[in-house]
Length: 437
Ligand SMILES: Cc1ncc(COP(=O)(O)O)c(C=O)c1O
Image 1 (cartoon, protein in one colour):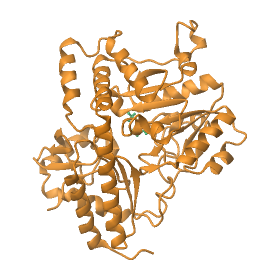
Image 2: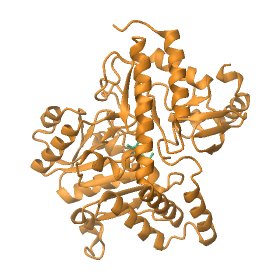
Image 3: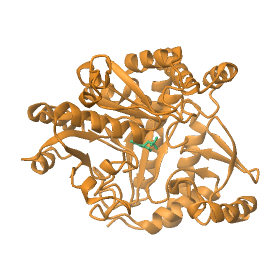
């Protein structure tokens, strides 16, 4: 059965949505051709739409949900908090408990909460400029750090096109775009430049779930040290998908870490943070620096609200308690997933690659193995991407996006969902196989 046959109510809702939401959506990434399905319930790794369809979810709320939709310990904590107040606009003990938990998890000295991953990156870049007295920022091709002007470049291929309308030359001229997994390339592009910080996703997320090479990250760390550049890890996705973040997995310590998604308990807005060394973070300290012109500003109406802080603190505590169980479990599911897909592609000689690590999986209909943003894009078979997406959708298995399949698993997934995806892939491949060139 085709998607449009089992989603009539979603079609009607989309007609209404188009009149009041540009493009009918709140975020373009959630659009599904020819209209999105409207979710009424999410539990574990499953979603239900307005038409009563049940889907297997491999998007997991932008990768934010690590322990499954409706994860009880967090939901129960928040239920209790509802009685006391959510956003009081004053200090509350939960922000301290949350900050202690984040600092423990990342072995950081200090942290500040933000309202989103975008904001976390915006403030981290500001802080890096304040600390170093330098202005330029290095970011990687295909890297996504949110919609902040100062990092909104070389996001979508081809990277020489403006990533959005409305960006000023003034903002863009301070961004140096860098090649992922290519230390010599990075060296060449920053030579002679006045660089305050280099920001990197240790695993390119939206750029295709492509892990950095360990040696590359180590080299980047050394390069930053040599040149007085702050190294920022954007761990908005990876922060809680690895035990203690990608920095622990790779054994490379950034100067600052930016966070989002799960740091706020995985279901709640106001989910973001930046953390790191005291000598950098103290630039925000109004007691040590009473004059506003001698410190960096950060703040916001909803930052540190009791709801998000309690949710985030509860989740991190649960992750700490269950680390021995959760992380090996997700890793093993991820391995099964990647191997299953690779076996299907290779046994049929099908032109596709699988990337990822841990609970993150990237699927690439390319002629070359992706190691960076460019190789994940330049030989992409767009028609195949769309066909594959539709095949999964018709079988009520969902991920984001058609052209950039990056999938996330959670503690709530089981081998059953993984094996369903793999066997649906085999069905697809059998039908669409063509010889590898
Ligand atoms: C790596 C990374 N950084 C930053 C962001 C932006 O976070 P937010 O959407 O919370 O602003 C995202 C969001 O997907 C992300 O994946």
